[in-house]
Amino acid sequence: MVGFVGGFVRHDDLRHSEVQLAQRLRTAHPDHLRVATFGNWQRKAAHQTILRWLDTDEDGVLSDAEKRSARIVLFGHSWGGAAVISLACQLQREGIPVLLTVQVDSIAKPGQNDRLVPVNVARAVNFYQTRGLLHGRSRITAADPAHTEILGNFFFNYQKIPEECSQYPWLTRHLFPGHTAIECDPQVWSQIEGLIGRYGFAPPAASEATLR
Image (cartoon, rainbow, N blue to C red; front, side):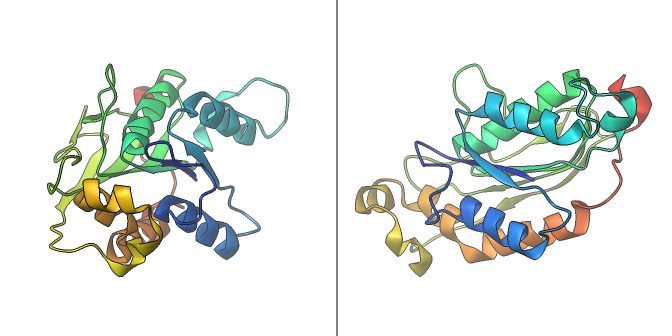
């Protein structure tokens, strides 16, 4: 399980829902689940961490069997949502399947495409809102619908910021109310946690032929 925080947030800032989710997952599955969070600018470090996790014989090279055994879930908010798709694309080029990608109010940096989900991803889901100066990708699509199931593009409308956002900086809450609200909305992250529980421990759905 790899999560990406948005903006310039520290990867271990527990005020943020991505970090809280990672902590819950780590606590709930201490014996068989590896979980890490990264800044959205730390995609290289996240990639290297995944490769290290998959290299079970520690020979420095991933075999086809090690790649096929991958059970990867990627989730992120804002720039972190776009980092999810960029990392999934990199894993596709290496023939590594991904069980699930989760984008929350995903915002792409220049040169990124956070709309098109690559074929190595079995399932993908997108949560977004449209209030304020910052709002995320409203629709994601599969590069190949035969190999990737889009679970949904779920819209959330906020008339006020959830109480859980009270620990966020005042400027963030007032300049970007909707973008902040969806990040700290417990309903959103409860749904994400449920999806991870349902799809995050299944065998990879992408065929070997797709990943060659």
